[in-house]
Image (cartoon, rainbow, N blue to C red; front, side):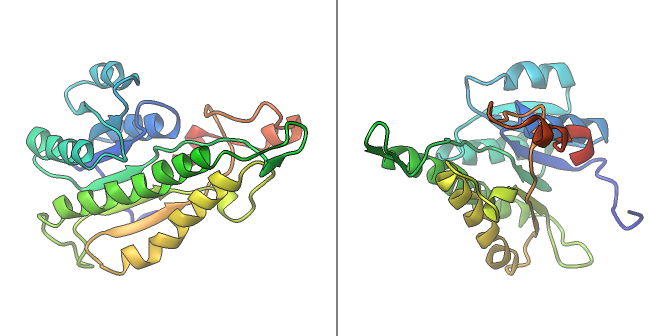
Length: 221
């Protein structure tokens, strides 16, 4: 842990930053002396959260799948705080649907599958490509990196369960893009593959045994 430098003075953009793991990340950034831009949907609690955290936090209402929205959020980081050092991709959606429902005689909705893939994979990549462009303006560190990207995958990328075809595929895509994107060496990139986290949405069907083995947000951060 001694090799991990302080994040004080850094500027981070956090997608899905108004709730769950994203919110906890924003709160920890500000607590540790960094500045944070909350990127979340206009309907989220992003504005209220930013106001509660003070002048080192601001809200960028945006959809991660929109190039214009994400460009505006990245620009807000530069205008408000002068730079962008860190992007944390926590935004994501999920559906729990079997590949085929024999009781109702209907297949998994292709529209729902495509929506999950679009938000989770394309949305994550959209943020990466635009954030890296802004980070490229920073001075490189000793390793030649000018920023850091942290993505959120899931254990479902490796061990998906019934009804998780879309979600598992999307998280597998995030894992798959990590290495080729990181090879550009413009920014250090890491991908987390976490399991269940207390404080985030968990399936109603999750057993008591499984719930007892979930992590709390403080353990993750």
